[in-house]
Length: 224
Image: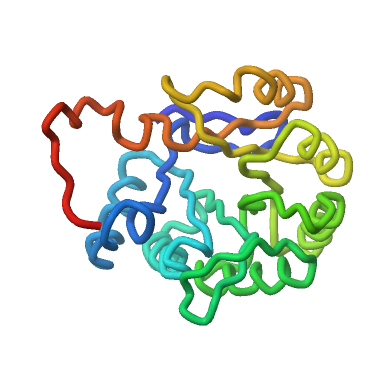
């Protein structure tokens, strides 16, 4: 497996990472927990060292599965997770929330579910228009100083937001959708990341499955 550094940081990851969202969220029913753990561990055996999750996936369940699966390999892998939402009483309604006090609360929960004492890469999942990005970056900067987080990332952020955040706490990586059929980051975002020395982590590089070659005219999908 090839390795690379994210931008100008010293965070080394496998060239292929495993996005774990689909194991419990987003693409139909959740995978059986035992099977999900086996899949994640099989990825480690094949040289994958970069694993992506978030508190919103499940919610919470995905982090628990990832934490259990990677516990025996913790010193060999990079775990990325995300904050940025609160949830309704039924855990279904998602409300943007990147207030500093909530970031700290989310990080404590993620550390517990991931069975780790530090988060390698912490993304703001989505920009919260009600909270200045400087406050978000400053809170993560403090968490890094406290040893609870190693690197700061953003997801689906615009160019000016990236610049403003990076001025407070260097951004290690931006995660955004990018594939043959969604190339918008090429217009403004990728040149900016090159300028600032920020790594790019594309999600859905195979178009959410539509570019795998397995979906053809007449393909049917199960309910949910």
